[in-house]
Length: 303
Image (cartoon, rainbow, N blue to C red; front, side, top):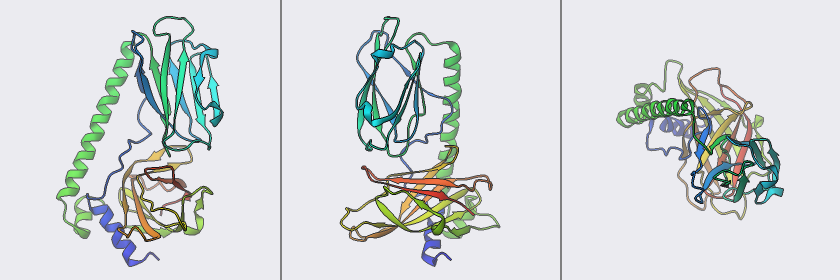
């Protein structure tokens, strides 16, 4: 059974708005990201997020010159698939978070702009899955689609703001959980899943215990991590909970138990939206710092 301190820690997480929200935007967004090239051919490099093992597809509105593709560090990509007007990239495990690679593509028709330049920046866990690159005039349908996506994003921002305001004004403790709708008559279910977890061989820290929880509209994972001997202190900056299909739960916040920099062990809580009781897993939990070290735990399930 989870310890009393862990349950209290979880309750504080669900109730307190003081826990910091994840800074990265979610990877699963409606539609594709759009990049428009300046018609005068002025030099600029759009930044595109890539990540080891994840696919990033670039779709152009003009045919590519297949022998005109320049990719820095090409040998460190497990897949570089060049189509008539598409380019699919999958970085290998040899890339390091924070690294960047320059990509230049050239167009077959020779019209302006004759080429496009991109900066591929390696992220520990997220990638731009689909990027549409517009070189010429856009159709009215693309503007309508963009307007729909902006309205949807605005609605999500309004919902997030309403949630934060409600949490800020809510009382502490169980009253706060009830007042924000995070708790119903079923309470919080918990399950120790340490024995089922599949840790990655490249993990920077060792997970000594993993416990998962479910409330009315959210789930949480409590991970006790131990820093390896001689390693510098580690603090989580971001997290993802990704299912087998590649879809992600929206991570609401990450909370780390206060500890001394000299402490080898620390408890980290990741809370995510899960409005449906059917959201059980398995999921892959990935944590990363402001640096190259990551922790990946597979087969995470919820009560």
